[in-house]
Image (cartoon, rainbow, N blue to C red; front, side, top):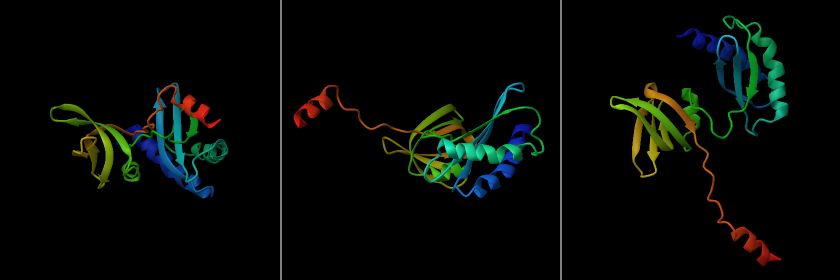
Length: 173
């Protein structure tokens, strides 16, 4: 395990019980350490059944900040950022894939022939691989170890054609 991975696991172990103990129904979604040695950002991402608002982020920041000072292995300075994962969230851990079953995802992964992409509905996840059903109905099984980047994809509904909304509004008056 790399030094950064070890640091992140130490942060996760320290922060997860604190987030759960706040009594807000929150879960720790992810922990990332971004940037270089002189300008690092420690991003703590939380989720909740009603979403995450500014008051929630403030409460998590106030609860987590003093705990991080005592995390062994997290040396040096960093900027603490607490946020929600948003509508398009990174899928990096097995529990991320498990919670995204039934959602549209985009996956970049390695094959013997080179890098590939899959886009479609995440149909299954067994802890070591995921099954993505593409728009054409084909199913691709992808090993988690081969995935280099994965995220959920938010798809906007069809947009009304220009002028149609205005014409409907005039007809109602």
